[in-house]
Every structure is written in structure tokens, then in C-alpha cells.
Length: 294
Image (cartoon, rainbow, N blue to C red; front, top):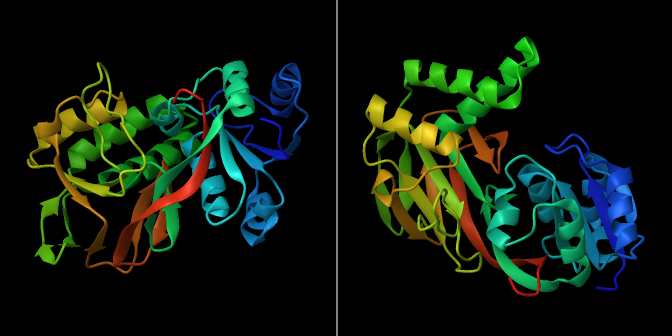
């Protein structure tokens, strides 16, 4: 692919691939893109219109990094390229992208543009999923452990999970879906950009990203043991059984709660949003580069 290309690098993402290593990988593919560090200024310039000055904007980082760049490119001419240098890289896996840096750069160079869906809640974009309740509280607890105790990411998450099981928080939420209203008492509500399949050997993946539906997942059982088992499966990317979650396919839904603000996880990053939370699918809103055979 011959194109005007901007690469935005989150050098603190999981693999720590910095601008020099990424520049060398592009040079081996005979490409000389403009490479910049990812920060609020670069994202703001893309959203204000710089996204129309490039053919391709490549996000080098994890899912949170990719989501922030994707948000800025909605409605812009530039296609999104992905170098999955984060820890889990769910979005890249679902797109069928290679996870090794040289192969990922080659995929950006020779790939094709595919148009996919994104989710939106109260004006914020998510490319994978959004959740309320247990998961954002785990992320906040994990980050406190890392900040105050200096723990690494996964040990900090294990500590956060153990504390969550002891506290076992349930939340009364009000859901409005397709003209029907529910008020379940649940530990979490999980909303995905298109639905997950449990047919893979070890993990849940989304078989397509252009189906035009959100999937709202809630647990049918809210007992401590069932939720602890589900949390462990989620932590280690081993959710295998669809009966562990009830799935509701929708184009829009609204979630409300008796709170002035709600901690909401969007692609692994936590934001404080004011309820009601208004979710919608934005069908075929994002242009993204994928391998030619994907």
C-alpha cells in the first residue's frame, strides 16, 4: 500500500516497541511514515481535521490506544492501521492481524481497507466492549495497586479480583432495550461491539465486526461462586461457555442507575460518565486496514 501515513506510538504499551524499532520495521518494508508519540494533542488534531490529511493513520499500542485513535478517525478519510504492541490486543486478534511487529507492519503495507462497526456510549467510541460494575472497579483497584504498591499488571489484577470477590458488589441497574424495561440486580453489565463466539479452543472472539448489532451480556446467576469462576475465566481469557452469560442483540440500549456518575470501562480504560448511559451501534463507521485474506 502506497499512502501518506502517520504512525502514532504509545511507547509504554505492553511490548514497549518504541519509535525507533517501529521505524526500522517500516524501513524494512520500504516505507518512511511520519512517526509521532501518542498524546492528547495528536488525538485532538486528528479529530479537528488532520485525519483528512493522511491516507492511513497507524495506532501502535494496545486496545485503549487503538480505540482513542479510532474515535478521532470516525468520519475522516484516513483508514486506521493497527500495530498490536499492547498486552492482550483483542481488537487485532478479532481482525485477524498478525501480532508480531514485522508481520503487522507488512500487513499495513499490503493490506486492504475494510469498513467495520463501532459502539458508542454517551458520545464515546469503543471498538471492543464497554462495561459497568465489576470490571471497571477491578481496573480502578488494579491501578491503585500498581500506583501505591508497585505491583506488575497481572499480580495487581489478581489482588483486585480477590478483593472484589470478598466485597461481592451487586448493582441495581435499569435497562431499556427494544421498548422493554428491566431492573436486574447484577454484578456487571457488559456491552460488546458485535457478538462473541465461544467456538474457539481457548477464548471468546468476535467472528465479524460489521453485523450492525451491540450485544448486551448479563450473568444469569449472581452467586459469589459463579461470578468468581467467571471473573477468573475473564482474567485469563478463557470464557468458553455461552450459558455463563445471557446475550441480548440490540442496536440501541439505555442503562440507568441511582448515581450521579458511573465508572464505565471502554476497551480497558475507565471513564466517569453521567447516567443514563445511551449505547448505540454505529454501523460501518470505521475504515480499517486488514490483511488481504482476512
